[in-house]
Image 1: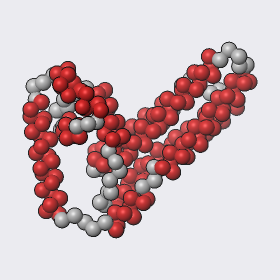
Image 2: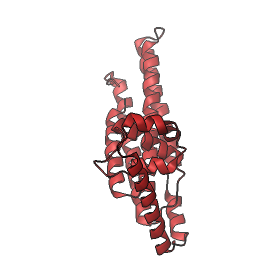
Image 3: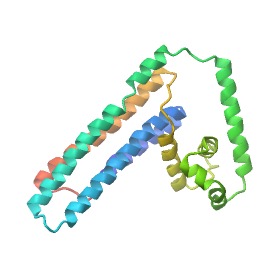
Image 4: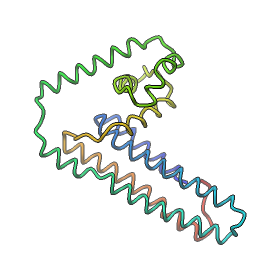
Amino acid sequence: MLKAVISRTNHILKDAQQRLPVEAADAIEKVCISIENLNDIINQEMDRIEKDGKLGAGAKSNARREVLEKAGRKLEVLKDKSSYSTVAEASDEKAPAEPYARDENSILQFMREREIRDRLFGMTEAQILSHFGASLFEGGNQLLLNAILNAPPGFEMLSEHNLRKLRKIRAQKSPPRVLAKPEVVRTVNDSIMEIFTIAKRELDRLRKMEFTGTLPAK
């Protein structure tokens, strides 16, 4: 039901992944995943209603509207839980890290990830998954996960299908971290609010269409 919304939110996410720090993009990705999960729930309920032979046309229409109304309320709950305003306040109060130490940690992290990618070079996707698939898809090896996901464009080691799965796992496993720059936090907030606005607008449109009997296929 929300295919157009998911398509648009994926564009927002891709833009964030190109422009923002990893933790900021992960925060946006968690919201995208919540919209996808909501869409799955809506589709399952719509299928159940459509297959219910005990319901007449009018009853089915009422049931579909109820599903969309519940989805709208769920969306508001998700929106409340996805606010990063408090993160922005914490960023202002948090003392900045020593720049040299921060740069050193970043360099060491990059070197560790590059070493892992060098060791994986030449292995096929099937071999990588055979050796490391369990720890990757359980999210238990964060360094390996980041090494694969942070591979330079054109040097990806896994298919986009599996990379997408790993991005979801990283977004779900990674706890929210304080974003050092307030402007980054504002960008994250703006992107998150845009996603919820698009989703709410589409749910409202679908609910109104149900009154006229022109609800489109999922």
